[in-house]
Structure formats: C-alpha cells, structure tokens
Image (cartoon, rainbow over all chains, first blue to last red; front, side):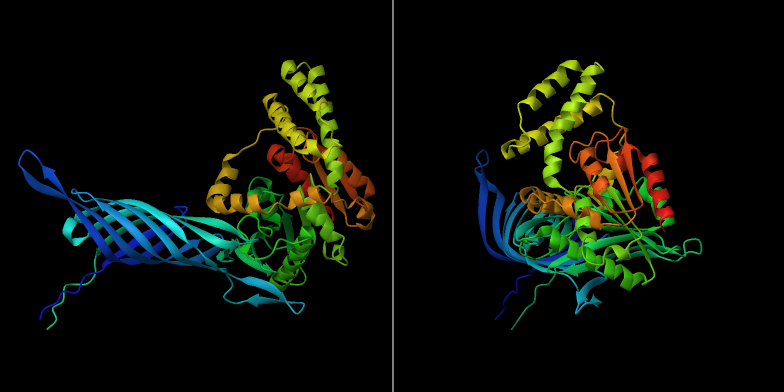
Length: 185
Length: 331
C-alpha cells in the first residue's frame, strides 16, 4: 500500500514590531479544508481557471527586539482563511485566539527585604489573542511556494492596571513545502 | 540592555545603558546616559502623558549629559513601563515608593558615593515634592529642580482662568489679534473656576490661549523634529498612548484635590523653581506659592518670558544655563 504524507508549508519571516523593531518568525500550517471553484469560460465552453478558498490551522513562534528596552517571544495558534486566485494572488485573514507574549527585561532590580537585588529572568507573560490580514503571491501555485506580507495585531491582556495593550507586528515572509513526499509500504 | 559602556579612552567614564526597576507589579525602564566622571546623577521625573526619553534632546544631551549622568525614567504605567497591578488607592504614594526603589537601585549599581539631583516637570514636580516629604529622602539629594511643577492641584485650577484673562487683557492692550482675544475673553468670563463642572471647559480654553500665543509670536521657537523621532523611534508610540489613556496620575491628583502646600516648609533642600510666564496648565502663581512656602535657605525662582509649559523646548539656552549653574553651586 502506498500513502502520501501531506507536506506542511514552512514559513519564515521578518517580524517587526511597529515595523522598525526587528524580529523573526517561523510557522507552519495545516489545511483543514479547501473549496475549489472553477471559473467557466463561456466562449470555449470550458472550465479553465480555479479559485481556491482554503481554511487552515496556522501556528507561529516569533521574537523581536526593542533595542531601547526589552526583547520578547510570541506564539500563536488560530484559524486562517486564504483566498487564492488563479494567478497565484493570496489574500489572508486570520484569527488567533490562542496567543502568548513573554517579555524579557535586561538588568532588573527590585527591593527584597529592604535590600536591592538583581532580579533574574525578569519580564512578564501575557495572554495575547490577535488577528492578521495579509497579501502575497505564490510563485508555484501547486507547490504553495511564495511570499506574503501580513499585518498582525495582538492584544496583550491585563497589561499594567488591566487593560489590553495592542502589539502591532509587520511581517514579510516566504513559504514553501518543508517536507518531501514520502512513500510508505 | 547595555547599549554602550566605557569602551573608548575618551569616553571611559560614559554610561549608556537601560536598566529596569521592579516594584509592586510594575517593571519600569530607566535610561541612563552621560558622563559619570563626577558621579553626579540627575533623575528626571517626566510629566503626565510624557515619558523619560522625551527629555533626551537639547540641553539634556548637549550639556547635562556632558557633565552628569542623566537618568530618564518611565514611571509606572507610563511610556514603556509594563507589568500587572491593581489601580492603587493612593497613586502618588505608590509612585513615590517606585522613586525610592530607583534611588536605591542607582546607589546599588553605581556606588553609594554618587551625588544625586532631582528634577521634575509638571506632574513630575508633584511626584518629586511628595517623595521629598517622605522621611529621610531629602538627605540623599544635593538639590531639587522643579519645572512648572504642581504642588497644589486646586490652586492650579483656580489660578488658570485668572492667568488667561490677564494674558487676554495684555494682548488686547497690545492690539494683537483683537477680535480673537476678545472672543477668548468673552468665553472665559462665562466660566467659573470654582465650579468643578467648568474644569474641562477651562482646560479647553487653555489650549486655545496657547495656540493664540504661539500664533501671536509670543512663544520661543520649538523644534519638534527631534521630539517626534524620540516619540516614534526610541519610544513605542502605541505603548505610550495606550498607557497614558489608561493611567493618568495627574487626573488622580485633580480628582483627589491633592495639595501639599501645608507641608512645603519641611523641604529644606536647595531648590530651583523654573516657570513659564504663560503656563496656563500650572500657572506661575502656583510656583510663587511653592517658592514662598519652601523651607529651603537656598532657593531661586526663574521666570521664562517666552514659555508656556516647557522652558527646555522654548528657551533652551536660558534653561541650560540656569540648571547647570544651580547644580554646580550645590554639588
């Protein structure tokens, strides 16, 4: 018996907080289902072009540095939608209800029993759901290889006195299939 | 994060680094820049809605960082400060505790023999005053510089309207934009500074008066390019705006009618008062009131004739010279 193992697209991107604080992000996606729509050419009486509407689980892990104050790790998981045109244009909309943000603060000092001491691994963890909107293009339509640019907005919950702090991340990335087809007996 | 520290021969005593202090749920960045040769550290307390690095330009970089180490601190829930804590019942008390942690941290990190100067602008003036009234804190400092700072919120609100009316009269007498100043005067006379319902309306009038003074050419030139760069590039503008919108210590002071007037005689530290003549946020009368009440044997009041609320932006040279000579006198 021969079975195909589905390749998972692998993504790497520049992940800039407010565009200018540099970072990097890696991620992958797992297709949930795809709707194929054929555009009908009336003149030739042929169905020639195909539009895809893909729903997929999307997961990412990223980091960025704010050179003046801190660095941070982010992770997120959510359901994304991709509209793929016959020409390879992709439009992306995503909701990431599962997201976390961890800041790391350098050289932090706190009062401990009346004495100042250095606090190791200082920083804060926030639940950070978010959404994203993007555009890109597949170079090779069937191989899911291409580029994308995306605006990601995360909301860091319970920030300071309990409000949500928006975190705006601009992403420029590439995606390709990371695993080759494997045959199994 | 260490950006650059003591690596060239010429700059062997220079410090350029970011540290953080942690206190009661808040993590607050402290940007430390300048020359540590004389071990003089100047702590800058920013105003409400501002942030530490907003001051890092003009006299601060061109003069003060050349001579001293400037300590730019983002106060609790301001600028790039983060963490998690409940809104405190007494905001200024908690923030003065943060300042105490900052002072102890500076001594721990840079040596117990460092000399300290405290400088506060607007809300930072209130915070510094409150902090200095805590037991034993004045002894840690060589001098205190208060720039358009508020010690009495009700007095500030009461004198704002009368200052604006007096400015309007002067401008009318000088024949400048008569129609506009008459309109301002008319609107002001309809308001009552003793009525709390008119508080916001009077503040809105203050904005109009400021705009008109600038249009009339009464205010010194302000270079906004560098401040804009600091706001957008060195600072995260989203954090700054959202933090400011959600945690407004000055509003707490207004709401609670905070006044430290009756305790100012306890401050005996050498103090420099710097005030803008046209400060319709914290009028010069508030500064004069503080000046008269301070118990300091060495105190000086300086009025800036072409300034609203930010003398370091509008009369840079005079600001630099006054601050520099006062610090030197009391080291």
